[in-house]
Image (cartoon, rainbow, N blue to C red; front, side, top):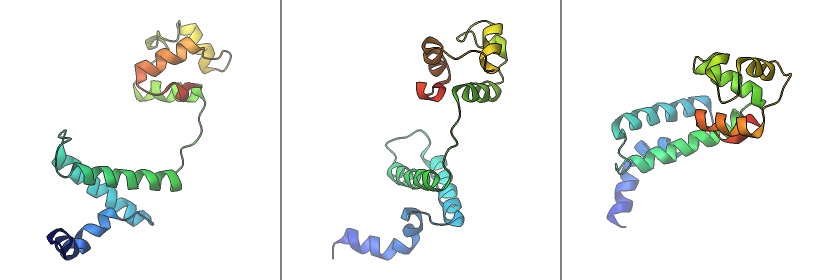
Length: 133
């Protein structure tokens, strides 16, 4: 048996909970907490030896979310409304869309976002254009 496998075998019971796909909310919560701790240790250092473990845990969390907590489908207007609220913006703070009256018509459903507006909003908020389509 190689030294690597010997060490892995000796410490597996400590590491296994971090590498298993979560099947319950408790296991999910354990991974989220573990990832939070790892990210505090790693910081911005992508070359940190624990970075790969953080990526694996993040992937397991994402898979669980995808399977158990699907994202609700939202319209482009709902996404815009949400992003404006999250960023503390009012209708006058989004010139990418147009004048305040244009924004009001879009938010009330009287007008659709056009492609130019969608692209500019995606750039401003750092999200894919599909969010607004």
